[in-house]
Length: 252
Image 1: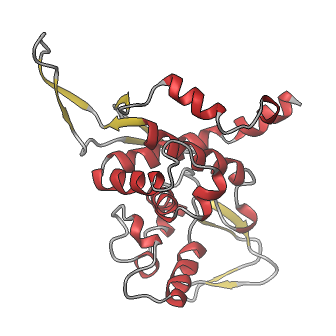
Image 2 (image 1 turned 180 degrees about the vertical axis):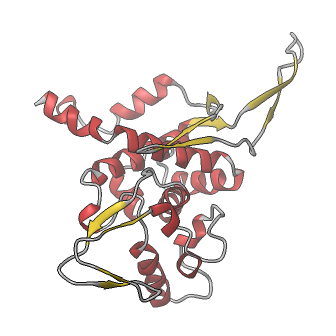
């Protein structure tokens, strides 16, 4: 049973790692996103932990940040191929593709469709997943349905990742915890040496460019960061808050 459970969790570890790096990278680059994320998470008093159901369904800005990050940088770097059924397909230039032709869609390209996602598709903008001031509920839902129809962070239809729900569980649990517990800053440049009276002077470079290798996954590198506990947070605090979520040891 342990082996079976472990294989299910580890099978999608590569894509989940790419997704989490993307999410944290986009959050770290923008102090406003950090502030708005923490503001939403801390409002109900759940500063460091967010149950999956609440984070996914109720915390709209957290969800928008995650969706927008994976729109900007979907984990998969491959075409989602399909074979045409027993009929021809007419594409936009009226070319007819015969039966059994292999066709594919690259998620990254689909996510840059300006007619669906807006003119600023190259910009990280979580608010595009939220209701706009000028929209009523029906207009907002219609726009979001159209965006989701081209959203291919984990594929679409029969080619959708079978482990996407496990990955979402991990992502929606970890992201609030990381943002709530830790101060994570982009690459640090030391501008002066520390002394007994003066702490080390550091400059955060939010414009640091990561490197991406397109293999099966879109693997990132060159993401030098500084990580430290937020004031009032520690490893002991993490353990206490984790155990406090369970009424008894039998719930673990």
